[in-house]
Image (cartoon, rainbow over all chains, first blue to last red; front, side):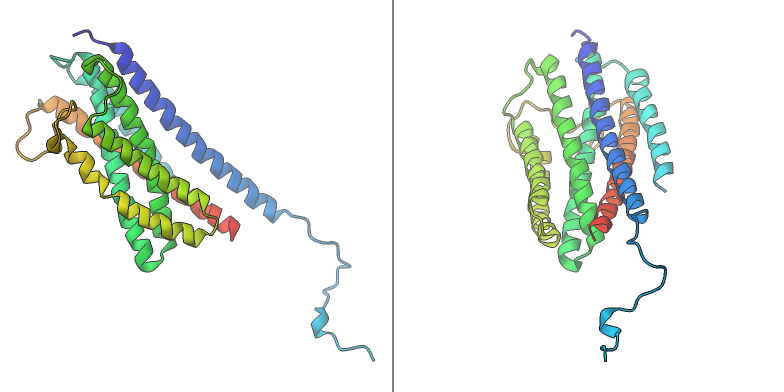
Length: 63
Length: 215
């Protein structure tokens, strides 16, 4: 029987492409998650006067 | 922990490739095209392993509502589908020069295709249901039911008359294969098993991060 090296290379080449594609999918997902986590940490806070404010419910009613 | 596994996996895959394409001898009847076996058989082994893990993870999830078990089942199903697809594709490439056809509705080929479609359905189901808990519960049921197809795939070559050859390695009784071929196959089994562990570990980590991000 003929050796059919072309079929062997096609099978191994296909496997390499499929496995590397999955590896890329994992790496891209991880990068996206890392990016999201970083952007959550560096989200700008609402501007304040620098003094802590009490919650409205804890303030005494106006006389 | 995942990075060292990746390094060992890469070394094992390189060793497997050398064994398959260099060390293993040319097969007498099929010629060099038989070297596809070192890719095809370990792929189906990993698919069996992955779906067995899905079964265990699904039972654990339904029993204890463990999110970790659900994540392992999800990741394992994804990797299992990947390797089942690879098994079908490499089998088809091997079939053309040896059987003279890319595809035939043979019992083994058909049952493995059903296995592929069932776990693809498992993944689609997970993606379709927005409620995470409900999706995990339904997927766990599918993960248990679909596992009944694994023995059907494996024993199909005994139960029906097929074009596909019976197992050479995973069968009872003494082996008939030359030692060097068995060694090449075992190295590739080990390499693919490590690759499975590496992929699942990374996918589980990613799923955990995604769940934490959603809250």
